[in-house]
Amino acid sequence: MSAAPVQRPASGARGSLAGDVLETLQGVLGSPEAFVPLHEPRFAGNEWEYVKECIDTGWVSSAGKYVDRFEQMLAEVTGARRAVAVVNGTAALHVALRLVGVERGDEVLIPALTFVATANAVAYCGATPHFADSEEATLGMDPDALEDYLAGIAEVRDGACVNRQTGRVIRAAVPMHTFGHPVRLGPLAEVCERYGIALVEDAAESLGSMYRGVHTGRIGRVGTLSFNGNKTITTGGGGALITDDEALADLAKHLTTTAKQPHRWAYHHDHVGYNYRLPNINAALGCAQVEQLDGFLASKRELASRYSEAFAGVKDVQFVEEPPESTSNYWLGALLLARGREDERDAVLAATNDAGIMTRPVWSLMSSLPMYAGSPSMDLSVARGIVRRLINIPSSAFLVSDHA
Ligand SMILES: *Cc1c(COP(=O)(O)O)cnc(C)c1O
Image (cartoon, rainbow, N blue to C red; front, side, top):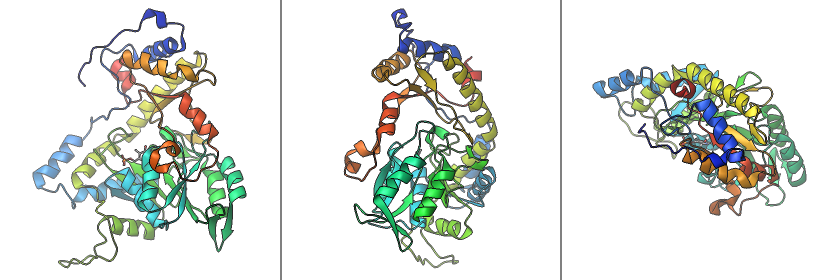
């Protein structure tokens, strides 16, 4: 990190919501001299050794031992029978949707409040995203609201869920575990089961997060992970599919490696496959990162508990806690301003960023993006309220021990 000059807050800000939030963040982070980013990677293990070995041996690309090892390690830490490593989390989502049968002309239920990759993966299949509302306790898809909504617009015909308003099949639902906080997967899985909708979990943000003792991504038929530079662990860029279905995992491996039939020399491909394979050199980084996962998770949980304690005393601001029946990885810490204080969000963002502590609002709702503005949607009141009131705060592993 380069040490950017840091402005001290104007003392007049004290007592305002912006001043209170800034002071509380400084209390936890210790008025750091250098700019504090939202989420930084940390390479304190065997990264250099493993990556160097790839370079020294020439095994940097599409073959090598680290891809297999990384997949085994991911299966172990998530408890999934199989993991298939791919180039990024978006590619993992794309393939996951193909695996559960999403076709051109289908609809796929996704939260309106998500990163754009969830919606884009649906579009890559020629399908249409269909937006669902969030609940405040998890920030993610609300199973009760979804159930009421489907009762009004959908019916099951020949085992498939048909949207009576559009005539299209709702093939899959992709809940996303926002900032690592698991959605209520039990009730969601029940609704999907009843309507014949395939459940795919976008677990890009929730490596290490559990719902009722089961790792996120494992309740759905397929789950997807991301190892982008800002995620809990990183491979530079990378992602994975996890599933307990061996046949589905084999198909995922085949489709993501150009669908080439194994042969000593012949090039025969039996599907329109994808070149989504994770390079060995990225997998090497991944192996070193997984080795440190427990430490990352413990450190992020400690930071979350300090934030929680510090913000408990601040009026009209709430630190978002892990939902009931869940263990969150606390990937990205979030504050929710009280209803009625929405107008002060931008002042909070300005005061904190001016003082060298990075904060950020959440994504725009997918339904407000030009390419998805015409997509079907349920009422999105809760998600809309969250967008106006949410602020992400610095959450890197070892942030407290490094700066305090
Ligand atoms: C990070 C992320 C992804 C995948 O991102 P990649 O950068 O393609 O690895 C997908 N969905 C969500 C919600 C994410 O946060």
